[in-house]
Image 1: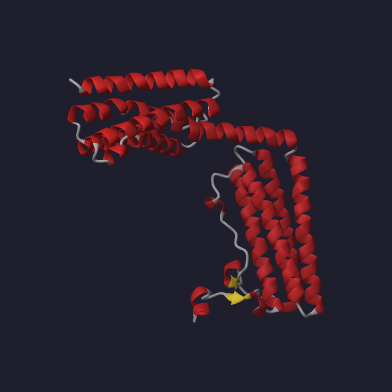
Image 2: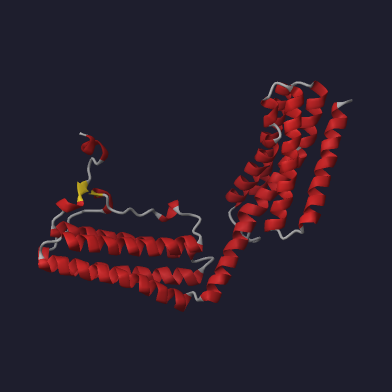
Length: 327
């Protein structure tokens, strides 16, 4: 009963006939060809050299699929049963390329070598379980072909994306991530952390009411996040500036703006005003120093200059909030 519950619709590999194993190999090669073509298409604009590698790999998979179909026709005729990876219990799975986006270079290259290794292991295992000599030979040959794919991928990488090209592509990828995610996110974190200091602490010292302070801080953080996110998303589509997707930048900016304000708002969920304010001040200090660290780490800003700018600005806004709250 449990077996039927967890493996409903899936067959054990040991139950497949030689014809079905060959059909499974054909469908698997076809899927891998499409995955390589999708990788190539997704990387072509920013990483044309790496895209060429995947186009060549797709061509290799296509040739193997055609050879498999020819062998199948000779042995079993024209009708190829529809058997895919998801129909076989315990068979390796492939993630569609859209689940791996954004397509980082190293991430995709690692996925490719894993794909070839998994396929080679499949053929080795299938060959060991085969009792027919001809089938055993066929599966062993396929395993050798897949192992050769790993070598071919390495050769193609050296030809189309040698070390200097790979370094350039990685540097391009790093800059793109910087422009699309880190820069807008950092701007949002700075704005959310600093701009909400005055209203939150003004409300805190004016009312000495943690609940009201929390509600004011929450509304200020959410409002600032929405405003900043929409502004970032709509003012630049990224086509001319090269800053990447406006949607991604808007999400990064809006989310980090909200987080920047929420950080020192959450302590006011504590009923005791003095404890809540003390914790909130500690959080503010951590936020400001974290921003300085991020500027130094990703924006190449000298740490002490970044710390002076951020901490000094934060202290001034913090002081304004306290002064206004005491009026």
